[in-house]
Amino acid sequence: MNLSGVVRPNGMLRLRVVRGVPRERLTLSSMLYWSMPHLGVCKEVRWWRLRNALRILNQLWRLQLMKLASAISGHSFIYGALWIARIDGLTGQKTFYGLASLRVVTNVGRDEIVDEFDAATAADFDLTSLKFHGIGTGIVAEAATDTALGIELTTEYNPDNTRATGTQSQPTSDVYRTVGTNTLDSGTPAITEHGIFSQAATGGGTLLDRSVFAAINLNGANGDGLQTTYNLTIASGG
Image 1 (cartoon, rainbow, N blue to C red):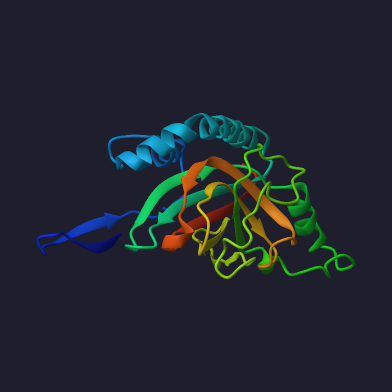
Image 2: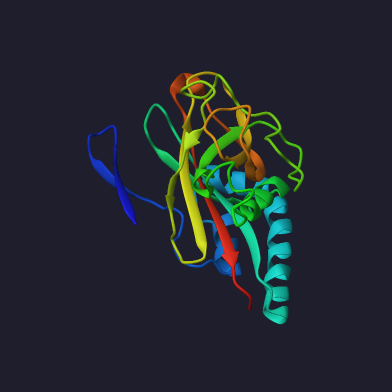
């Protein structure tokens, strides 16, 4: 749990709890808690979660079917999860929106993972390079055939044309995590998509996973930013 101080106009300091991405293994109930609107979150977050609700619910029931099939058959499976927080460039205040998406690991991302097991095809890049966070304004639904974002930001990024470099970790033994913050210096984009790439420069790199979600408005003139946490879970056979 993190505490941050917010100074009121009367000079008094109020402590505010800032929630972040949980480290523990997520159950269906906890996924619903972190993605659905409820009174425990602020009005801004409730409205955003309401707009995103149908999308995430559709993804959640599919994930539960995968888990059930794994438990019955003993087969493993893999899935990504995206968490989002907006950072106000003027105040530095972070608004944690929660679980934004459970879609979708791409064909090219899968192929690169498989290639790394084969010495004859493992020369493209190291898997540790899959840590760069791109964001954009495309609204076309995710597909396994995606190789790039729909409309990725370019000069709005600070620095221009440069995706955020993620900090990597393993919150649990079966989860790979990368956390990146894209800060803007121009434009007023409504961010609706995110991707994990193998390189920082825009216009290229292998896309591991693409997510589409309800819009989050950023103001580049204020230096607003979007912090994205991506978890790749590789579940063993049940």
